[in-house]
Structures are given as structure tokens and as C-alpha cells.
Amino acid sequence: MAPMSVPVPRLAADPIAEAHRQWVAHGWESAADGMAAITSLMRAHQIFLARVETVLRPFDVSFARYEVLMLLHFSKRGALPMRTIGSRLQVHQTSVTNAVDRLEAAHLVQRLPHPTDRRATLVELTRSGRALAEKATAALNAEVFTDTGLSPRAVNDVVKTLSQLRRSAGDF
Amino acid sequence: MAPMSVPVPRLAADPIAEAHRQWVAHGWESAADGMAAITSLMRAHQIFLARVETVLRPFDVSFARYEVLMLLHFSKRGALPMRTIGSRLQVHQTSVTNAVDRLEAAHLVQRLPHPTDRRATLVELTRSGRALAEKATAALNAEVFTDTGLSPRAVNDVVKTLSQLRRSAGDF
DNA sequence: GAAATTTAGTAGGATGTCCTAGTATCTGAC
DNA sequence: GTCAGATACTAGGACATCCTACTAAATTTC
Image (tube, rainbow over all chains, first blue to last red; front, side, top):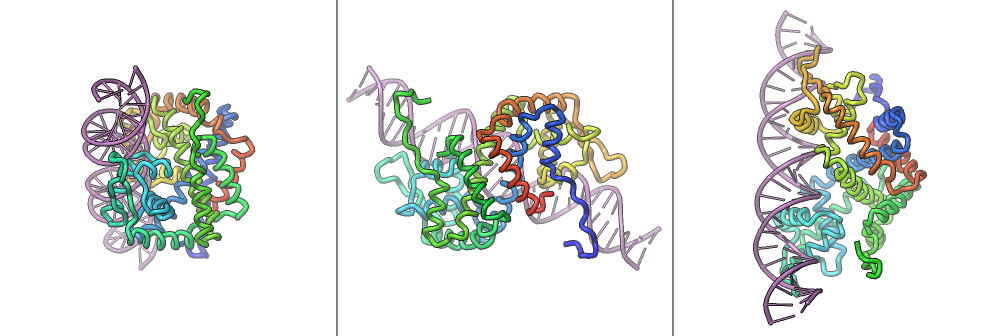
């Protein structure tokens, strides 16, 4: 942190506003707003992912693996087929294989044969996996989710707008 | 695409709305909205990144490398120090090194010694790099940015809300 | 009932991101 | 002027994501 007596250096203008101006200057008015929206999304994602990963680091899980744990935590039996995990989280099967490999190595989940479909594999939360999910959630709630840096109204707007977007993209 | 006579299979409910319900059910009301907002952001990011990468694939550049090209394209001399690229794009120096390595291998940019600071390296857009930036932008404008799947009003709201957020996160 | 197709999961590889560590150079305090 | 600390960049490694290709098992078709 800079001492208070030292003026904070002038930061450059918002790079996205700058890009928007460039888009307009090049005659791409009709795409400028969309470009700004998508670029904003990319940056906001980066910012929040970093925050979340920082909070999760002491628990030795990534956000991707945390999402798997929570999905299992919320399921009736604490177990789901790999494939189901992939569709709920909207990630590629191979990403699920990767995440489950690591979770299993950390004894947070365990692979079990599916009782009726021998192609499928069930992923089951272990006792320590469930405990970790709860502790990590408490930390995320306290340190990230409760105060996102946006007003409650803005938070709601973001959720609504993006859910409209996800729906139009076939997310659900 | 499914023929019109075949009913579209019932998709599961929105997974984020479902997670929100779970959060509330577990007594985490004060964090539920923030969780939903951040999770929505993650999904929206994933959706748009995939769209953008699909459009850029024929040009053999990723979105990360495209951003570097555009930054150089918009600079006065078509050249910037590595470090400047990193701060403008808000990515780690090593990510810049990685992107520039690949862009240079594709002859889209070229590394030059900095005239006054021998520690620094200038990255300069080549003729073909500039041409590619223009063609890729035309494709992105036409296929992604002009129609994001959101209303113009929603697009503006997203930009405004997220810029407030980026500012509070120190993004500019 | 057998063959073709679809589905579930894994393996290997590419890309992008970050982190830590290391080298070279510049800056500023003394 | 020297030397300590800051700054610019690269190297190597950990993760996460996707893609293509492959095996095994279930389902559909005929």
C-alpha cells in the first residue's frame, strides 16, 4: 500500500471504455456495445475467480473441484454419475474426469460402479469431502458471496440479465 | 436439431436458481444472491468464450492472442512493451510471454529491443498481424458482438454494472 | 437375435492462466 | 559512485479447459 502522503498514481482510463471508443471510431458502432459487454464479462470473471480461488486455497481445492463437491453435497444420496456432473456444471466430460481424479486422490470423493449401468461411474462424497464442502462454503459466504462489491440491486440485475442470457444460450 | 414433431426433452431447471434455493434452505440467505451472481458470471463467461473461440478458430488465434493483437493495433506505433500489455489486459506477465511467443511463431508480431530500457522488450505488430486483427474483428463483430442474445438495454446494464464492479476491484 | 448406433468414461495433447524462482537492468539512497 | 531494492522478462511447473480418439456397454433397428 502507498503511504497516504504519496498521491496514488493516476491510473489509465478504463480499458474497456477505451476499446469501445476505438470500436466506434472504426465505424463498428453496432458491435461496440456487445464487445464492451463481453469484454466486461471476461474481466469480471477473472476478478471473481481470483477472489474465490484465494479463499479456497487453504482448503486445497479449486473452484472447479468445489463445484463438484457442492453438487454432490446437494444431491439426495451424495452421489452422482460422472455424466450428470458434467451436464449440471456445463463442462466437458474430460474436465469431470480430471476433477474427480484429483478429488479422489485427496479422498474427498470416491468412484463406485453404477448399480444398473455398467458403463457409468458413480462419484460419492466421502465424510471428509462433505466436511470440507461445508467449511469451504462458510469461508466463501463470509469472504466473497456476502459482499461482492455491488449493491443488492445490481446483484439482482446481474443474476436476472445473465439468466436470460444463459437461457437463450440453451444453458437450461 | 430435433424434428419439430419430436418434443424437446424437458431440460432440468436452471442449476443456478436451484443452487440459490439450496443456499437459502441452508440458512445462507445473505450470501445466496452473491453466490448466484458470481456463478452466473462464471457460466456466462464460459458461454461467450466458447462462442468467441469458435469464430476465431479459422484464424488460428485464441481470444487471448486476439486481445494482444488489438491492443497493438490501437496503439499509436503498433508496438508496446510486454509489461504494458500485461497491465492493460490485466493478466500475469508470464501469460504475456506465452501469448507473444505464439504470436511471434505465427509471424503476427515481432519482439524488438526497447530503445531506452534494455530490460524491456517491445512487441510490434507485423503487416500480417494487422491484417489478421482486422479480419478477425470483422468476424467477431458480425458473429458475436452485434448480437449477444441480450436486448440493447440489457447489454448496457451489464456494461454499467460490471464497470462499477471492476472499478471497485481496482481494475482501473 | 445380430448389427449399427449411441452413450459413459478415460487417455493424450493443446492452450491459457497463475505461481515461484532466476537473470538482467534500472533507480534511488547513501 | 556504489549498492540495495525495484522492475522487465523468461523458465519450469501446477491446474483447468477443450478436443480427438479409443474402449466398453447399453440401446435401437431391422
